[in-house]
Image (tube, rainbow, N blue to C red; front, side, top):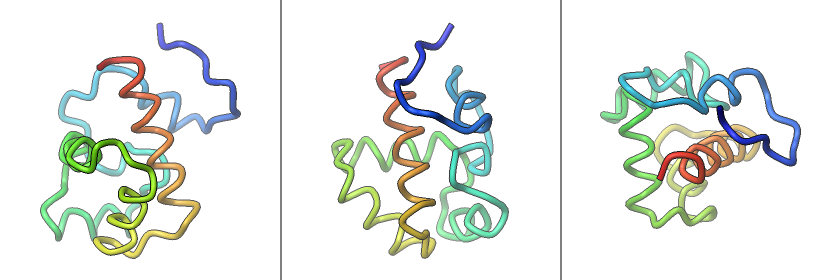
Length: 94
């Protein structure tokens, strides 16, 4: 059972906090069909590939959010939701 975060999270965020498997990128909090399409076009079609980039960027919040802005033109809220989701997942499973 995933540990509870101190902050309020979306259902999508909570659903993501389980083994990543082969989940599509749109299962990440903050990533809908539009951003998911942009990420897929850039070669990031699976949530695990975005997780990999998060790890390559050393889990650095500012670097990850900058990458999200550059790759898929994510808003600050979208990149923040995605960062928090991956950060919580990493704390739970890594």
